[in-house]
Image (cartoon, rainbow, N blue to C red):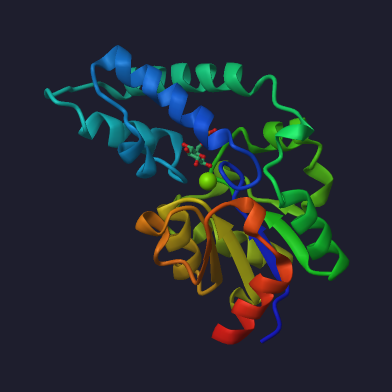
Length: 222
Ligand code: BG6
Ligand code: MG
């Protein structure tokens, strides 16, 4: 089958906001006496705000019992930290190779959607000056099951009207790669094999994302 669409993750793929999510959770962790290190953070990538909080609370060295209202408050505080951290981002914060990749995809007349779990995604895209590049942006508020469930990617393909097998998903998270694979799409991972070994095609960083190489790998597998 010929590929027809790319569905991109945002945080950690288009720009390095994954780091800001990490720093904001780390601060909440410090307030709660729960160490949030980079290993735990890998389990938070791609995962919704409240589910991330649940995973952090499960890592608590002492039993914690918080009400739903307290959890909501913590999640809101995390988001406030995060919003401060992303306030200054600008087009120069687009990760290396991404602008070129998007231009190459557009020149090849392939479609482009965004499949982020973040409720801040449209804000970040605006800051980066990239909103126009995406034909469709999944609204995580309307997704019942977050990554690793495939719904985010299935929704993007359904709205574009593209068969799942003709979609290529790009992700930096373990949960995201699982979601793409479960959707029956071709998965491109950006990051370390330790976490992303299930990806159909893996590069160590965004500067290595080249359209012709990705398409070659896609055509070899499908
Ligand atoms: C994902 C991030 O893109 O969005 C996660 O990888 C984050 O770290 C999730 O928890 C939800 O983001 P937000 O901005 O809605 O809290
Ligand atoms: Mg990500």
